[in-house]
Every structure is written in structure tokens, then in C-alpha cells.
Length: 525
Image 1 (spheres, rainbow, N blue to C red):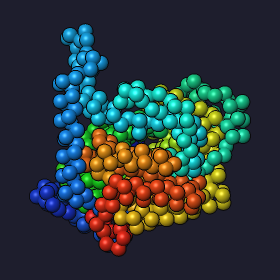
Image 2: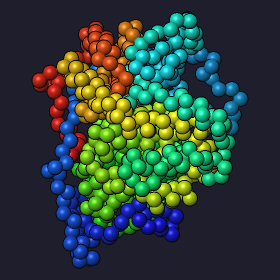
Image 3: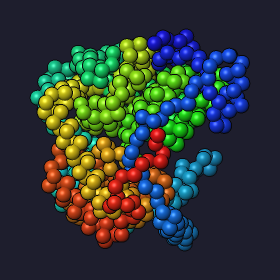
Image 4: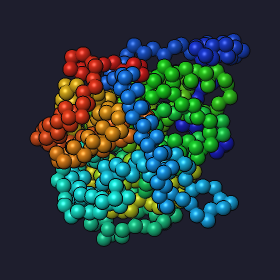
């Protein structure tokens, strides 16, 4: 690995290899190969890179009815706004200024989201364990105002990200608070580093099997402020269409060209990569992906991405926020896919999920970490991770490496397979790969999704419903997050409630044979 003088880092060895002509860039690539007289790169061998998962498509009739229902709601909202426009919707004393809100945003928030917002942002009054306590709310004015009823609802927790189910660290957190205080009130590059940070970074690097790591106080900012440091002039980013917002914003801040490939579609990625290589004007081409995609429940096709990276001299940046806990040792997507973490140039992750804390990390080669420390805004300007949080994460990391933690990794794997198999047997549409503890159940209609959230809550199951604009218009879904802390009784209680909701709301959309057995993902390798 070498540092460049143009303000960016060379994440790995980039030999100037040219590509074999293929697809849209055939003429350009042929000329590039002929002009340089270098042997063309052979097509990627996909024979051993297969990936299976359940990604059933929505039927045309369901998509049509879902769209018609949404357009009807929009029409009724427009009519209501025209006839009974509330005073709060009118901006005053704004002459000469741009409007605060776009007209559609106002319409959607006021007439669609407001009516169902009791199903979102629900306050809790307990730790995110296998069970969680919700604080009930009600409204007398159609959700313009929500009031607490004083009633607490004890529910099976299928909405939190504590995948490994760790609950310890109390003594370590108290000791860190007494020794270092609650916060250090400074960036890491100034007076915000302590011995706990260095210890955590060393053990993270050892756990992931890489040379070094650096921790950041905020997980979202880890992506947002690191990508601009790694991508400089002459860089091109190839980004998955389903990447998290933090990755998207990080690429925008980097001010580099971005070409988007279809979600987990390695053929499309290969085509874009070969075209970019053939253009001959990019000093660095970086693939930006996630380990587990939190809305799709899909596992990244890492073997194919790494093979493509090696063949074309690309670089690979992986966000493992939701994938820690996967694999035989719980090390994430690289462990689950059986690839070496050193084949990934930059491993990013957060501590707010399987490590029940806060913050994030970048792991990789020593040169990469030195560059991030020197040029990354997160290390130079952002608030350092509080010492008690570092102690909590360090405690969770050590527990994960111990036999008890490895037992929970196995429990998470068993819970995931059991829950997914039972859901598919019901005939509902379940997306994702068998290893993913994020389990989306497609409902399509936003109205049915809201009804499902309400019915599950009444049955004692807390789960997250997701709809437009977080998903495409006709792909509303329930998103179930599994944990090693769940017992079989917890899962059976949740599955019984889901089956009752599926019967009442008509959610058995699956058309797959054999009771919804997983089919090959047409978008994967």
C-alpha cells in the first residue's frame, strides 16, 4: 500500500491492467487493449461464486393495486388540503425566501404520515433485550398530538439491532467513568484519546484479522467523514443501489463521480468496472458495498466482488454495520462468505448493533489507518468516543471472542434459520439470505403495513414497519431483527402473531413452490 501525493490513498496495489471487451464498452475496450498491446483481462469465472436467497418479485396485480391505493390517498389528501387547509400549513412572512417545505413533502407529512405516525418513533422504557417495554400513546385529534396513556406494553422485541444479545459490561463502564469521566470533550487528534481507545483498536484489529483499526465516536459519521479522506481527484466510486444513507452522503462529500450498480448484481458491477477501466482516466476505482443490507436482508456477494477486484485492480470498501455476529466466529460478512478480511481494503462497522454501544470503526492495513487518522475529519474534528462507551464495546468484544459469545453466535444462526423457515412455510414473501438476522416480510401496501404493526403490537410483538419513502412505492414491509437472546418461546409467540395477522390482512402473497422454499436470487452471481 502506498500513499499518493494528490490527496488520496492508494488502498491496494493498482496495476494498469486493461480489460477484455465486453457489453456496452466493447469498442472502447478493444482500442485500449490494442493501443497498449497488453493481454485483455479474462471474463470473471462465476462457477464457484453462487449465492442463493429468497427474493420473490411482486406480482403485477399486487403492484397495480398498491399503486392505485397510494394514488387514491394522495388524491384525497389534495382534496382535503384544497377544501380544509389548516392554518399551520401556511408560511407567513416569507417574502423573498425560498419555501421551507416542498409541496409534496407537506402533503405527504400532513395527510399520510401524520395519520399513522403512532406506529413510528415509539418510545420505550426498557433495555433492548429479547423483550422490550413500549409506552402506549393515543390521540384525540387524528394524530396531530400524541399523549401518553400511562400504560406500558411488554412485547417480544423484533425491532432492535442487538443481534448477539450481549447484556454485560456494567462494572467496566462504571470503572471507566470513574477513571476518565463521562466524556473527553475533545477530538481524538487533540486531547480526546485515552488508553481505552488504543486497547479497543488493538483488539479490534486482532479480532478481524487485519493490521490496524481506528475508532470513531459516531457510527453514521464514520462513513460520512471517512470516504472523503479515501477518495480524491481521479477516483471513481461504484456504489450499490441499496447502500445506506451514510455511504451516499459520504460519497457526495467526497465530490467524486459515482456510478450505481443494481443491488447485489455482480454482472452489472463487472460491466461498469470494465467500462471504467477501459476509459483509462481513473487513478482509483472503489467498490462501495454493505455486508448485510438492512432493508433487503441480503448478504453481499463478497466472493464475486473480491474476485473482480483482484482481476481488474479495483478497491473494496465494506460497511459491516449489520453483519457482525455472522459467520462461524461472528466476524461478519467476510467470515460468513469464507473470504480473507485482508482482501477487503477498508472494513467499516458500527458499535450500536452487535456491540451494544455507540460509535464506529475503520479497520484494514496499517497504512490505511494512518491515512484515516491524518486526513479523516472524524479523527481530527469529531467528538471522541466517551470512555464509558469504549469500555462497554471492549467488554462486548471480549465476550464475543469467549466461548459464551461464540455460543450466542451459534444461537443467532439457529434462530435466524428457524424463524425464516417458519415464515416461508406460512406463504408470506420473505426476502434475504438464510444467514441474515434481518428478515424483511413484504406486505407491499402501506395501509396493510400499518394494520400489521398495530395488530402485532396488540398481540405483544414489537416490530418495525417500513414504507415509502424509505422503500419503493409498492414495497412496504415489516422488518424483523433477530437476536441470540430470543428463546424458541419468544419466536413461536411472534410467529403465531404474524400468522394471525397474515390470515386477517391477506398477506400470503408468495407464489413459490414447496411452501416458499428459497429460490435462486436472479440479481446475485
